[in-house]
Length: 399
Image 1 (cartoon, rainbow, N blue to C red):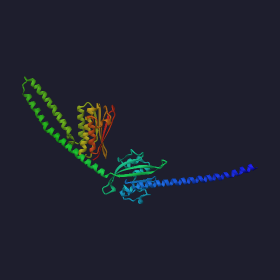
Image 2 (cartoon, rainbow, N blue to C red):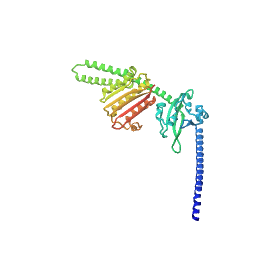
Image 3 (tube, one colour):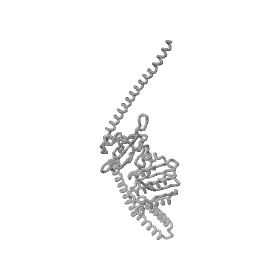
């Protein structure tokens, strides 16, 4: 009887104990939540202070494209105060005249495939941050002269890895762009001076040395006719001299044309390139094919001669080093760029080794191509593998 009463008291005490433990647990959870919120608030405040004091113009948006941070540097740069834009989705107003996505907006929407539509040819994926993208663009509305900006957008995630927004940073590279443009102008002038010197030398060779050789050829021919048949040995010697003079005249003519291709000025770039290929076909056993698109809008002379020199040097390299049996040349263009391609089925090479400054003179042609294109803002891309041929592409922006 006493035992049963004791068991009843124990059973009645269990719910009370469990209730007290539950209340203690709730209190602990509440304290942990407050500590987490306090830590998060302090972290956000710290981040805000870092962003606000950073000299790099920066803004942050959340998953709803709402601006959460707009630092002091961006206030100064854009002329828009943080109090006027934080909480809104009007970040585009700092950069564009009408509503459109910034790079950070595209990351928030997960639409990285749309980046080419909004930043065509002006962006690339970041090598440093996974999921980040960077770009360079001109923003005419940022000042009366406009500004060039280098910008990077990166995703933001919480401690659990959940996507919570994106941050975009900006860097003014206007002065750098101006310097690059000055360098391009000076480079073009340098190339034009070089080509004028080549033209002058070509004319000197053709008009002076060439004419002297032609006169010598005529003199030998007249002398040959006057020598009697009895002096056959002398006549044979004169015949050999005439042969050598003819070879010299041919070499002089080829050298003159190599220094300054007259067809570019007389007939245009495409006929000059076709003439170059036909000449190559006449003295080489390599089977050559070409497809050159006619460019309706005239190019600057420096662009014409750079394209011509690219193909000229490429064919020379194929003949000297490739051991190819086939070669294909093409010239295509769009509204914004020109693409020149040289392909062969030769022995190929290791590209990094070929472009090394420690390599021998065989590499000078490729290095010369690259440097000449770089001087006018062009790019050279080389794809080659030993025993699998070579493809060289030159890409230039339209004038």
